Length: 100
Image 1 (cartoon, rainbow, N blue to C red):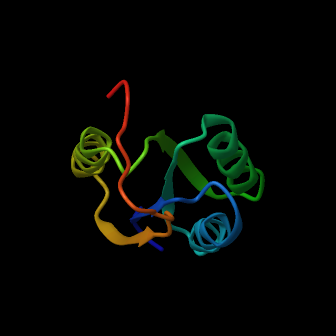
Image 2: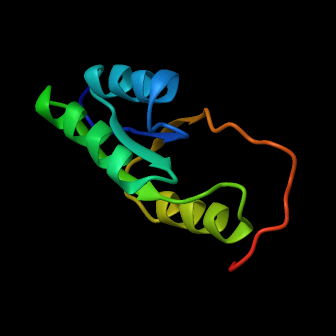
């Protein structure tokens, strides 16, 4: 690819989400992975970078409106064109969230 194109993976800390992120990174996309667990996100980014790919992460929980808006704002502020959003986060019935 001649220019950096962005792919965002939500719920990309493991399994299918992480595999899809690695696949896009391997094809030359800059991948931003998002999920709730910083350590798992760091592992996915490191795996991508160790194979020559480009990636970074954003910690967030898409069941919270504030985290959804923060993720969207961060992606919107980037210079790269957005090619895809891979939404792989598992969502359950809404529950009362404390502390947010």
